[in-house]
Image 1 (cartoon, rainbow, N blue to C red):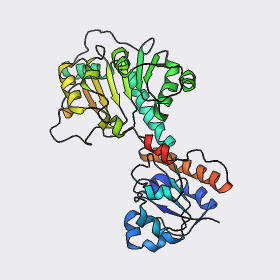
Image 2: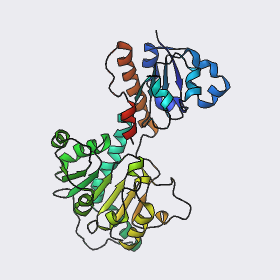
Image 3: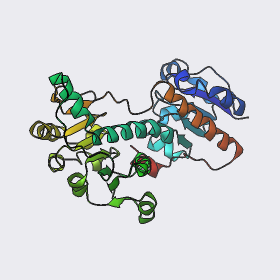
Image 4: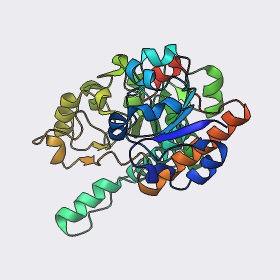
Length: 327
């Protein structure tokens, strides 16, 4: 039987409902560990065939890997693995799989809720009622029916959002230079330029991974070209937007709204206008898995471990190439 060890912060949060199933499939030979406990007792890694991890996983560099000479697979009960893998890890040909699809579910839910609420101009009316202590005069709202929603990037989250939007009778347009024609047809979206997404959509939702090539991808010009009363939603990474240009545009175009669950830096600096602009809705990176939603991550890893033990193809295996484009 394979020997396994838990290595992460918040063991109960992620694996609290999955550990019994996991413990049937591998021999867990030690109590759950953290980055700190491993520093105090590094030899405990020497017996590990597999590591079950999540947020708080140490960087798996050469010194770490030397402590775990038998390591064959890592099951990462969280999303992106970018901050924990190294070239030395890839050179070892260790299998790594992630609960990124599970972590995508609440992001899609958050995004969908904000798209639909924005198409009703919900935040605008909320602020008007608050300021005037009265209901404002009736105003035009796009609504979902016949409106246009723009998606920037059709990775896993973008695609799931596009799928969900099919039931709301709106038109979905998207920008993604890497998506295939077959995928576009399956999603029933219209591909167009980044400029056209911003110019045509009633709501634009960003799902772009943070890479060197995407830093500052969204400019003030893109945002200023948006339709009157349009909304920008960002649940990807704050660095994909040129923040100062966005702020200046939102100060000038008070008809626009920006719903920002991510910023750069995060949180914003102390005196950032993002805290005070009426047309900015700022949430503290809550779109991803929180509280009991994190149990989904552990359960996905329990399922994946079962496939690994049975010698079946893994569903969420990550390669070095795939890791580069993950958010």
